[in-house]
Length: 77
Image (tube, rainbow, N blue to C red; front, side, top):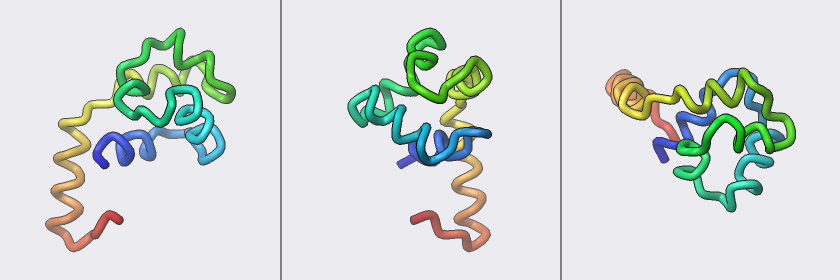
């Protein structure tokens, strides 16, 4: 779930492009997060900036944010 949340927070990564990513990487979120920029850019709709944003995802930081949200009563479903 953490990887899903992290990817959903990437600026300019909309639903259609997110589905393209999932299709390209066979629904493997870890593969998406570990992919090099060159591989990410092979996905329709993924340009240099989005690819770099995906590569810069810090799951530890996202986990801290998620904990903070939950402490403040925000439920992620």
